Amino acid sequence: MMAASRTVAIVDDDLSVRRAVSRLLKAAGMTPICYPSGLIFLNRFKHDVPDCILLDLQMPEVSGMDVLQYLESTNISVPVIIISAHGWHESPQACMAAGALTYLRKPLDADQLLHAVYWAIKKFATSH
Image 1: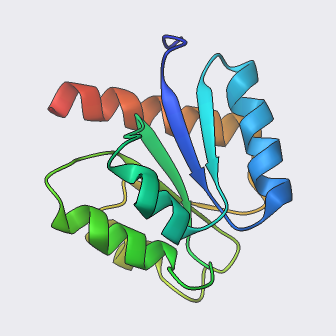
Image 2 (image 1 turned 90 degrees about the vertical axis):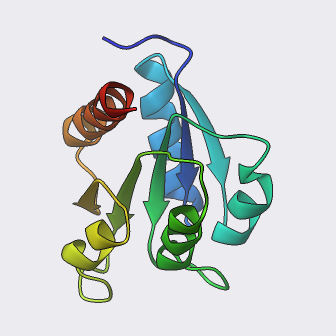
């Protein structure tokens, strides 16, 4: 298991997704930080750098791909897991080419999501 101090940003415009994923992460001993838009996340990112980011692709104003591109342009590295119900809009390959570690389709499977978060944080910690 992972230390309780791990923070995971949930960037998704769907309140029900943010609530469900937040509850799951809390139950697993992590600290979720929810952002209802990519824009709000980017405005807070410099001050609240999480250990991992769960990022929806389809959001108004600033899309998940926009966020990925911003993260790639900074010197701050954080593992990103894409969560999307719209696999047709941006392919998993395009997301990973832009810096995401993996791509999960909604509806999310709790075990798969937790495994991906643990894996991303561990992989990132051993490579940096």
